[in-house]
Length: 327
Image (cartoon, rainbow, N blue to C red; front, top):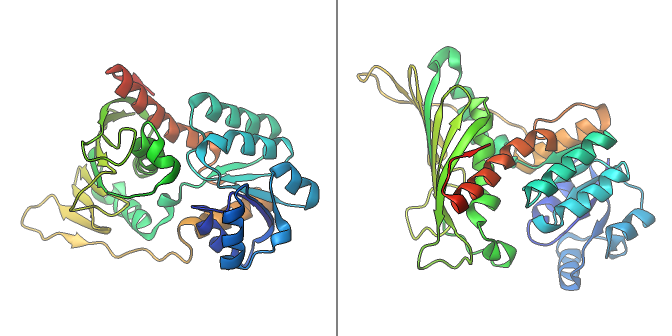
């Protein structure tokens, strides 16, 4: 399968390397507007400079492609994705699906109308850690889940657009954690209430810290606290998770999964990691390739992912209104 990658700087590095290492996918061309980025990536990855185009229209006019990888900043996701969908080209897009509810819905509506595949790269689902945690939550063993607590603390210095976003943590990072909540719980949220803030030492323009309470279908409650302005004692990128279950507790701590039996005299047991031949972006690319070639439906299509993104938009609305928001 041949793909055009739109955006080759920043996160584009990960996708360049992922495609170059794939046995099933190869590049038809690239789109990039920054000459310095083009020069750097041509030198770093050995790209063909003649296949780098300044616009998507120029690339589509010059090369044949089976699909498109959208790695542009969020404000460009709508235009790039819809241009491809209207041309009948399947899209694998970086998260978030879009920066606003209206733009996200427009992408979904276009995918529904055209019948063309659009997948969002929720790569956190497809780590060894996440798959091991999902396995440990087997209801036949642990029973029903009653409550969920998630903590996430990091202090990254990205530079660029993330440090100018109004709600960088929630929009650019917490979407991963909210999507994993849906994945682990097998349920969708009903309501969201939260507040956000920016610590005095923050290097972000917008609120880089937040606390959110979510109610899921069936009455289950989840609590989420996170920051991108951590000054020490950080969590892994996956965060630390605690599931209070009918038959004990399942916990993710420092990327290790533990089961704490309900009988307090029993010792906690670490869960053996599941075996995964492909993880993260490599898994998603392979799944996307299979979907394009065989028609299989991936888990994180735009039609499904807008439900995860809906948590983000509802959280932001709650921050700004101080009210409980229905998702």
